[in-house]
Length: 223
Image (cartoon, rainbow, N blue to C red; front, side, top):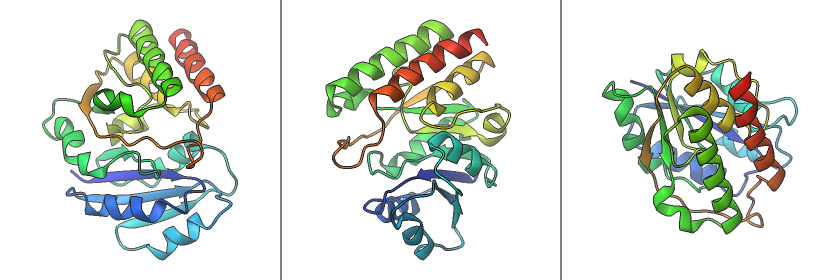
């Protein structure tokens, strides 16, 4: 199966080229779709300079958020598997073979890359939020997961396209988790490596995004 690596990106001029290089080096058949969310720096120009048969750049007309970028990128996907990749170098594309293995084996349609073995690399506020988010997902949806907020989410393409996503920002993670589970689909977890970066180094998620994420989990339980 071909993997469509979907990379939503905003103001990542310092890391996007290295991210793409690492994705290209991963030993899976793939296409790379980068959705630039109207970056204010030269992120889009850097990606354009790296374009090739395996890489497509999509530019959002205005900044709308990670969720909106993922929804836009999904329109361009041609592979049988979709894998979400951030451009911040926190996650390692060397983990792709392990992430897609359960789908290739027909054992799962949805796979999350859990950072549970590396939670100690996080700042404590993020660790506490991850603990709460995972337990809320397990309580409300019987998700059976340890890392709801992980970037590495992998889907059979037809499964993700069948989900009516409404997310605009970082609420993509709780929305897709809720809607996957409400469709009765199991979520398989695979351990992945993780190297956290700080807000000073460019991390964009803020405390209010955590509040919105928890509310999103609660909201979709009853909608």
